[in-house]
Length: 257
Image 1 (cartoon, rainbow, N blue to C red):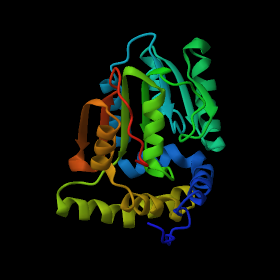
Image 2: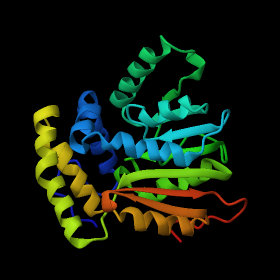
Image 3: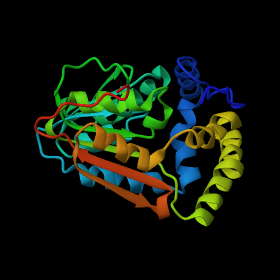
Image 4: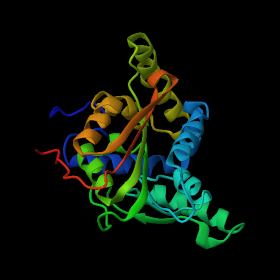
């Protein structure tokens, strides 16, 4: 879609990346609190499911893309993985570093994640580097989400696991309408009252309208030649967890083909 959105954070093409980065820089300090309020704390439960599905073994290498304030990164580390978290928002990474500093005072610093700033569509890692790649609430925000998924596929090892937690689109039309009404009316109000920015949270619904959600991710995983593709829906499709393994060998099909 080439039409410019009426939400100034959602823009087409390369401009969108800058606007979204500004969005997360703006709300970073209140990000965790708003997530707790708008989801009733359920985002922590959904992330717990992702970690369980990741089947982390001690010594696994894991990359948490669009890591934000580091929830998944710390959870992967707690399971014994060697974790790198990447995000393009410096303000979000600063929040992650503050959590790390607090956690390090009570544990071995070597057991904590490493956080670096990087672009999810141009990751600074060699092919087939990680055993596990995760992303929570990040794919929908990329200006070219299929390119981002290709990057996740590129850097995971053959047989490695890709897990993506994202806002979903409920298959039941009535429930979808109720859910979208909540995103349209209640979530921006929460964002305004807590973070002082209603538009940043109106963006969730705007971006979801332009995103194919769980079915689109499934189809893209098929095109990439992934194996053991599964999707788990939460609350009737309000959230989705897309999972797959990279096949031992295959020729990836580019989104441009």
